Image (cartoon, rainbow, N blue to C red; front, side, top):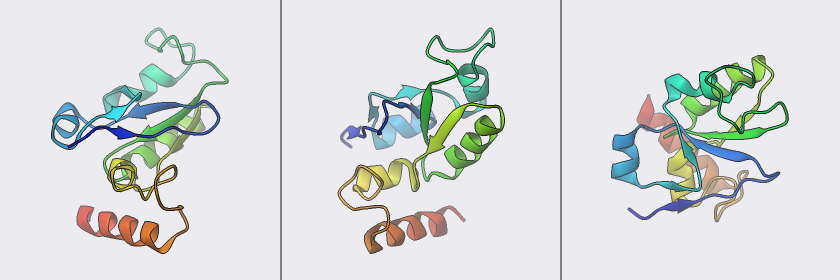
Length: 124
């Protein structure tokens, strides 16, 4: 599998939440910070002793998981703590297919809706 390229708007920092085995099997997300999903809050919330240097009050984070569900849930928890976090609908799989935001198809397109539905059905 080839590396996947994704450039978010607004100078946000992309965080790849997939584990190493997924990155090895499916490919890397070029330019993303790879963090274990369990450690995200400790690394992205500003002011903690374990926070990344880039974790500031105005930092924008875009989280990416395999199908987007994990990233969405974590982004919600981070927002509850005042962190500016979003996630990619459909996750890495949608980015790899070019159907997520920044990909070949627009998010509201029929191809995007079909791909997200297929991912959700596969994960259920």
